[in-house]
Length: 320
Image (cartoon, rainbow, N blue to C red; front, side, top):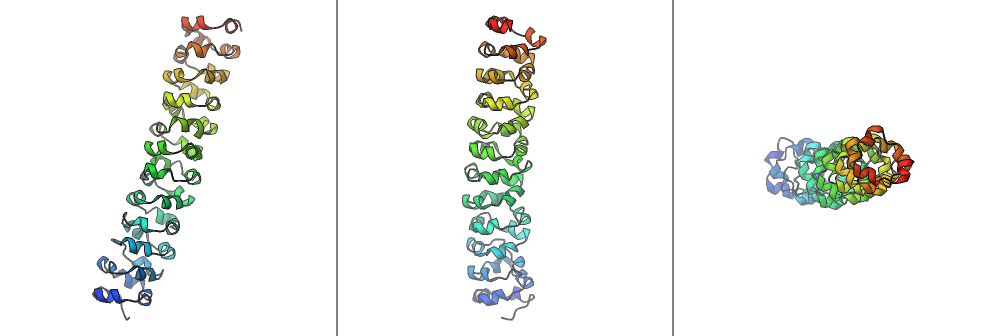
């Protein structure tokens, strides 16, 4: 086959169909770049697989069929330009093997569109490397379906950056298991918005967020926890909340906390309670406080105790 880049466009369909794999392998990038989208459409899977790595950047993948995309070897895919990666139809992206997808370089992976990400299979998502997960954009992360997000490994989730996690939807966070939530780094967890935190199920709050992560939460995040999420906190998690975080709790959260929560609070946490929080304490929670905890109450806090609260105090609490 004697073909120049100037004559490729004049080649007939019959000629293209008749090319042997050796003919295709002999084409240069310049020659391949002259093939129109329509001409590329006539190439068989065997012909697609025969293009040399040097020539592959010239191949138009706009409109490439499932079979053609699936015929690309891992080596060929490594030579695709970002434009070629983005040109693969979302309906054909699932034709890439997991090996080929995981072999995309960071700049290639960054070119994957939101529509393509949304079309990835669970096997393809599971094959994404930690480097790729660390590079995933907020838009792309948010396009993974709630059912598919559950297939991500704890290692993949641990690779997410504090920037990329802002792409999480509430539905995705609700779908994640406690182990998956636990895998999200402290830096990434602190970057979640209050709306995102609201999407985490109560059982996952309790068993999925480490005390170190709880301790790192911003006061705005602490105060945004629902009453159900607040009551689900373990005593260790309550102890991890600093004085500023305790003071940030809303009165509904104060009411939601159990007697076990109040029993473990430090004197520093008790003394950080705002006066309106003190007034919101249920008598059942107040009477379990130790004499040391009661002694930690400031004058302003004591003056806000209601008559019902004062009557409920035990003699030991009053004299301690």
